[in-house]
Image (cartoon, rainbow, N blue to C red; front, side, top):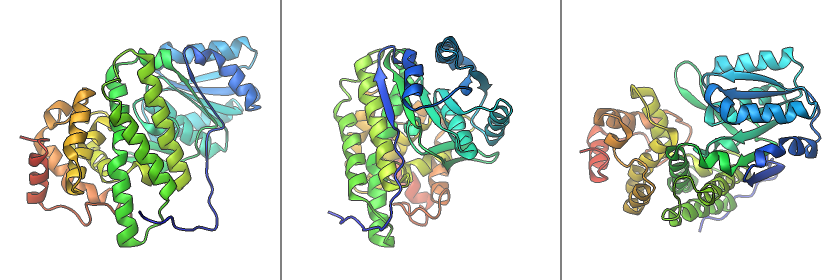
Length: 355
């Protein structure tokens, strides 16, 4: 066991309220009241998710006389973050609500952070741990980067809405959680070889979260609110682990670097969680761990385990493996200073990611 490293000061950001349940989105005003949030909220949502949940949030707040505003975004880019900030300043918004899947929540989270305003996360899908974490994935014009942001003050996860989202999104969320296994292994390696700060508490929570999901793969099915509860609670636990660590280390390692590299090289990338799942299979092999158990678990979830299932050509998998170590060069992982082309091809073929 790696001993926890002592630190004199630790700043942990955690949501104050986390509400999960059937139809709970209609309690949005009660959550705002509990947080002592005043009028003039700005709802950040997407074109599709506005019809599913954004309009419900607007109506509930408007009926309560809160005077909300709405902005619909198209993508998670720095340009959209700036546009949200401009609207928030123009409307004198007092807090932001991100209503949607990953893009709306990440944009609202970062905009709120830069404006020093409270933020509430209202996910319509459980596709990745961004719904509760203190990170935002934003495209800066060149690549998708993980940007530090404030954690949401509250998370409102309506299991009815999330259960009705495409099952592919829930499976991607499971894959993102399972990837904690290799993220923690990378973190332990960095502690041993680079003396990087390490938290035994955060690592244990992250690993336990991944184990619970991997042990529950037979129970996670489409359109079941019980499945949504398992995944949402796991995403919350993963976010808490990152808050304890003060970084994304417990949930982001070489498998995430592979996914970000794939975003850069593939003409049409798959979902973030799906790519992380495939990356976890290969990185677990490099760590000498039970990569077949990861692969079998993802198969039971009907999540991709091969390049073909991701809809990505083999050559881009290999290119991403060679590029991955450059994504966050300050973050030491099992990839070290990079794989050779021969090693990349071997790991991808042995794990059956490519033919």
